[in-house]
Length: 378
Image (cartoon, rainbow, N blue to C red; front, side, top):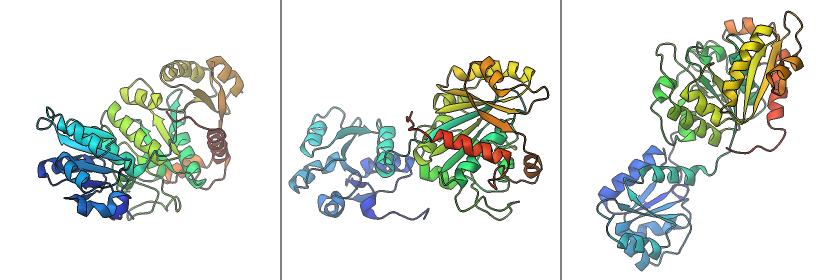
């Protein structure tokens, strides 16, 4: 359960009696939201030495490790203090003597060490698919499609993260009915940089589980975490924060859905650069198609795979294939009119929550197509 300390054998082992060095190492583990076991000497380390996912040995303890004849093992890092150890060649010799894979100096290598802690406890991660959804014009229905895809994937048993990247869009928490649900929004995440622990992010976000004050029932047993914008505090989404959130999402989830704002932004570019595929939602109208051409050009400058989703039917019967061909992009699918979606959204009920109706059926096809063939992690 969240908040519990994992068993010692599953935690990284830190071996040092140097309080100054220990403070730096613990600062790095805290940045990665990783709990560690700290021991002052090799005797105390022997029990967990072989099973710990990572062993961090302070330079002060290297000679004692050699004398104790602790067995060589992978995943050992020797850590010294920059300034104090930087001009001492012994720190590098010590690393060789204990069979360390890496020798680093803190605080210079704090960020590297934090990532190493996270890698040791989280593994390689899922390498989840990242889908960006953007409207070809205002009111195209991109937010509804993004939410529908996320809800559909969750109902299908996939782990999913939904990211609201449109500060002027009114908030995806309203679309899902999360507006009274506790959890972090973008104003609390804008300073995020580097590596975010996927588990810590998931636990801090609003999800689909019912909580006091919620206007609607849970989406189901599986949670759907949401990174939402906030209507009380308008903030510019930073590229670093977007990158950190998406990388955490990719490591923890099968699918990350990003609802992008129209127009150029650093955060939007960061999302598109990390996308597996980008869907441009285009109403079946001539003027909307013309506007979508500019949007598609902007998206295509950063995203490697851009596809069209046509929202129809249009007033003149303009066909989806014609729209896709005019934009020079493949047609991913059609977003049909669903008379139940509008009233449901007004009541705070998430789209596709029942798995029935035209929109739910199209979202099921789109989600299935995303996982129909092997994916390359970016």
